[in-house]
Length: 98
Image (cartoon, rainbow, N blue to C red; front, side, top):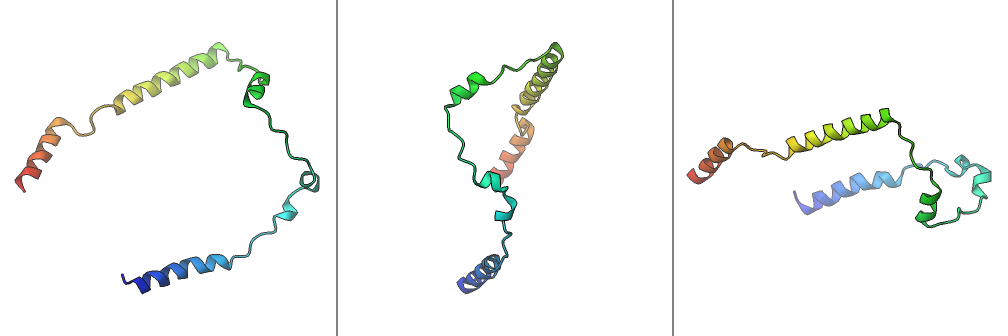
């Protein structure tokens, strides 16, 4: 394509985006939230210390262990060769013949 055609296509696709009517987002915000102070920033260690430890029952643990075993087996099958050796040899011969 010529440069002029590319420039025209670029402007033809970008310019209509500038004519878009944006929604009034100010009305969607609750007035109480608009006037609320910013939240206080605290170190992550403080948040982790105050969070309760997850309470897993025996059933939850067995479900997680089963899921872990399934994912590990799936990962093991994905680690195998993508192309089997016979196909790889045939492809190599095809490349050498040219």
